[in-house]
Image (cartoon, rainbow, N blue to C red; front, side, top):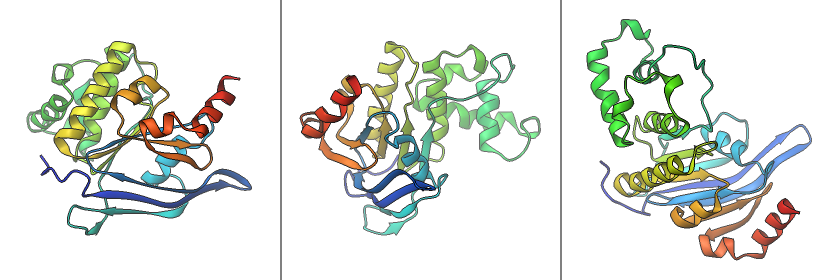
Length: 243
């Protein structure tokens, strides 16, 4: 477990921009997020939210720089964990949770790995998200919420400095959604990591988020939940969405 240095380590996004030809996906995006905080990224469809996360991951070509400073103020390259919106796989496949995690933890074919050694590591990772009982479950037999918890466990090995969650509870029922958010809140507190979450569930954001970024091609508003939710920018964006 990391020593609690809450808010002393920071991730700074400086002048991030993505263009495809003449099309601007977003431009001049600037914000700073702190360890020990959950920052929600909201905005209408097409605002550039998922592209921004993929830019931070380095999967999308972009302008701008990412700076990470640890608790001592040293400029480092952060470990980044990522949970996608969903995982595409053959639901009829016999592939188990153990098979999936083993495949992600080693470059060797799964059948050549020592399952006895890997199994202990997998159980430890799944225990973090209260899902160790799923280790032998077939992927196709998992509920949406269970699958997202498995993907969260994968994103936590190695333990990240920055955890990116791209609408991880899309299609998950209310019970599964509540479990996922509570797990993320526990991880934030226990591991002191910075978390950047895309979500459309404003009620859950109001309950669990520390900060909110309102994005629509650029950062329209950044601040506490109250500051953003009560802002004129928020009313304008979501009035247009609901019009």
